[in-house]
Length: 212
Image (cartoon, rainbow, N blue to C red; front, side, top):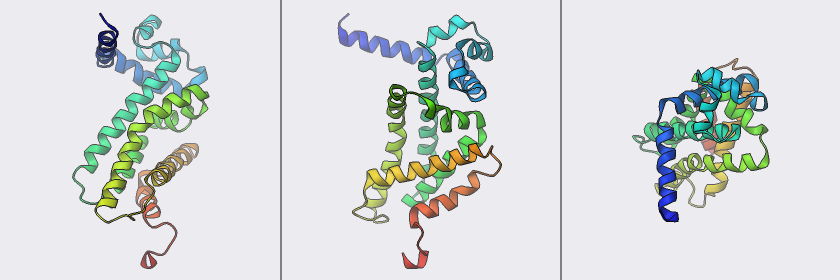
């Protein structure tokens, strides 16, 4: 087996593992345990207990606790991207795509408050090397925003000289900070209901609509 064949084989093994029921069980258990205990106090034994598996089973699927956290983020970001692609597919304008993207982002977090705690709080307490890995996973989501912005530029909805990178950072940052504030306020209000207001601010800023 040459190096390329070995890499392909490793990729297939990982894919098979990620499609097994126990892998998904462990991922869901990790979300609960990390949310309830914090990342640093979320021992492998607690995750195993929550998943209903032996401690050693965790290591059949993950290298260590850091790998569990990255895998949780990868799986959940994949879900975000898939759902956003589904809800934006039939929309005719960039404005519509942007609105349903924001609504979907907030809805997913509202429907899984453990996930909201993990993504909005626990992922931020990690070390620099871990943050780098998390940012790599995040790229696919950011590309979805880029595609919406490029679509808006091409159809004349958005400014021809729009800085895609800066606009993307602003959009994701606004959604992210809005969700984080909601989590810190212990989910006391309807996050999804804020989506139209966030959408309006992103499109029009603080100007009167009539003056845009």
